[in-house]
Length: 191
Image (tube, rainbow, N blue to C red; front, side, top):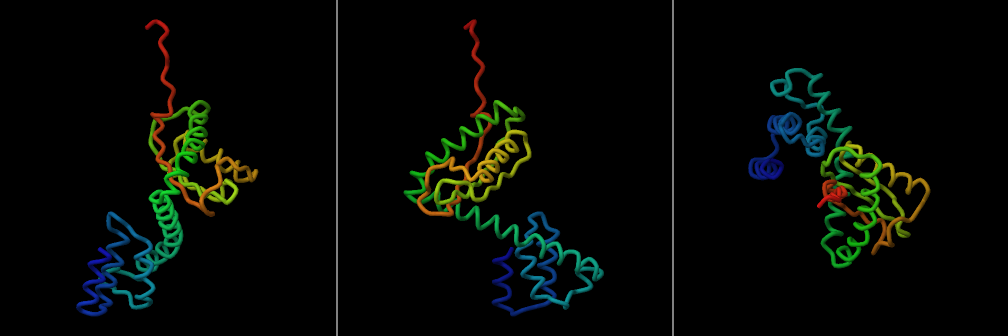
């Protein structure tokens, strides 16, 4: 949508009505985007369209939501982009093996301790120069993800160095955790 809107503006110029409609669409559409909406709201300023928003309170509420959530979404996108970029480099591929081994070991311990569902989730860790945890994000609330988050947060608080030194710091890494692959298979002594 954003690219199409930019093309329309380039071809026909700026339209406050179209800008209002676009902001409304990215706020209330299925793929709400507070970053794009915040940018649109900054351009709209006080020139909100009553037909689009019905009343000023609706406009102000949407504008406030976008301005509050845009910074965290930008940070998340930056983190994810950095992790993706790191994963594509030759040094990132080499580093990934040792990083994954350590993180999967932590996750395996959480499977034993916390139990829970076999959901998949993503873990993002910013590794510092010494192999310390500088920042982390885990997007799940199952018991294993919560345990892994706590384990990494404890390592950060204690300034522990659970990971090897990264190629540079800070160094974002992503791991897609598939809990089913971490669950020990029960042995059957009768077979």
